[in-house]
Image (cartoon, rainbow, N blue to C red; front, side, top):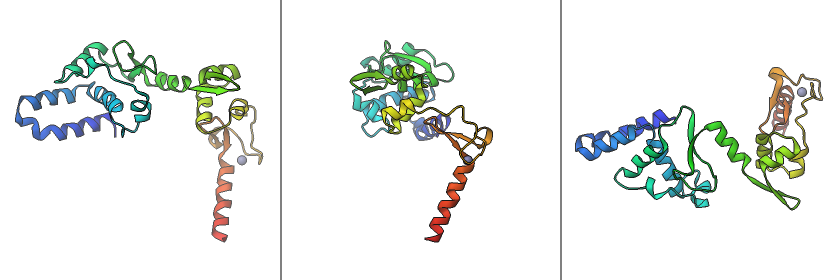
Length: 211
Ligand SMILES: [Zn+2]
């Protein structure tokens, strides 16, 4: 569901209330505000244990400052005044990832910067040393996001930092070209041959069929 659909849904929900007076009218104005869902989402992430992202917020004790939580619309108005309007393609970002939501710790950041930061700031211990993914990536000359995905995929540390992307290999072991349409690069940075994947799939189906 995209943002516009969410807003449309929210508007449908409050539509029956519209006629009931000033309260509904105020609520309607807020729901239509471009920052409303940003503000609402921030609060929900930090408040509800059943939120899909709760482990990264409620679970880590990330809180919203009192100024942004005031009742009767004051919290929302403060949030808008403190943050200003959101530039296109930007999302709400916390400067210190362990800090809460407050005017001092929040900024609008391009979505790409934010997700890169998140991966880069994960701590990984190896051989008695504790460094962020960004620091390990720099040390071993691997892209941050590739290394982050490898750790996430459960690779051992040694494999994650040592396996190359085989950039110099131009053909797979069966001789299919490893470039253009036949090349598939996984999230962990490993290059695969699509033709060989098709062959493996056919073999698998044959085995299943014969069983
Ligand atoms: Zn192949």
